[in-house]
Image 1: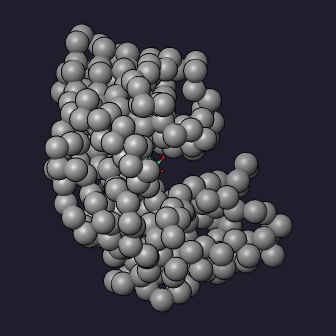
Image 2: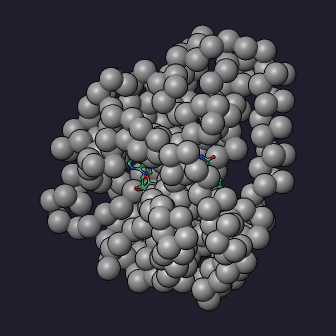
Length: 290
Ligand SMILES: Cc1cc2nc3c(=O)[nH]c(=O)nc-3n(C[C@H](O)[C@H](O)[C@H](O)COP(=O)(O)OP(=O)(O)OC[C@H]3O[C@@H](n4cnc5c(N)ncnc54)[C@H](O)[C@@H]3O)c2cc1C
């Protein structure tokens, strides 16, 4: 399988998920081109081997048990082409790098997303965003691998909602995307990135492993405030703890397992349901390859 890119056997995934869950995979492959990615998917499909795509693993809760299939990391698919105000980027690019490249070309559009620690693919999959903007605001099209072939989808072909896209219901692999951005002076854009970084440093537990907001905000409510109002800040299961800094974050204090995090999530959902009659819906993705 090593002719599709970098191959690591019996790989640790601890550095491939931001919760730092200590799990492993039989094969970890990092394709070195989109053509090799397609060849790999064709091969895996023919051999009937299970696979899973990972970006930065900043929105997932991986299982504790080892994966017997192939984890595909797109970290080598990270090319960015900028032509005037049109940008084409491969989906393994990290959002902060993409944002910086655009800002250096005086292009506005990704400055509010620059502090989200994921890849373009993960952001497009889950419609990542902040109050001010989302990854789809300036998107024109996405190239995917679907049914063992490359396809291009225009923005209108994709269903998009709060932290949801139709990719969550498909098996498509996101390969690259095109955006049309606006011209803006880079100094203003850099100050937006910096201010947002400072705000995040103040309000989020960035020193501890976590995977961002655990729950979506229910319409009209803040998930963090609901959890805080149940006095759950600091509540722990094993090494998984509700952050003292922000109640909608779970942190890994050292050796938290997937089971610890999932148990804690269940307790939070039960307490919030009991006190406020509100169902907290997960923003993070529980992966189940057992
Ligand atoms: C400190 C912190 C702050 C955060 N702040 C925000 C925020 O402000 N807003 C926000 O929306 N999110 C936020 N997040 C969550 C997370 O960073 C985003 O959801 C991000 O877009 C996930 O990208 P990823 O590459 O890590 O995806 P992963 O976690 O690796 O994957 C997420 C899902 O996308 C799928 N996927 C990834 N790449 C592809 C691909 N190329 N093709 C098909 N499927 C793919 C995976 O299979 C998985 O199901 C934060 C996370 C952290 C840790």
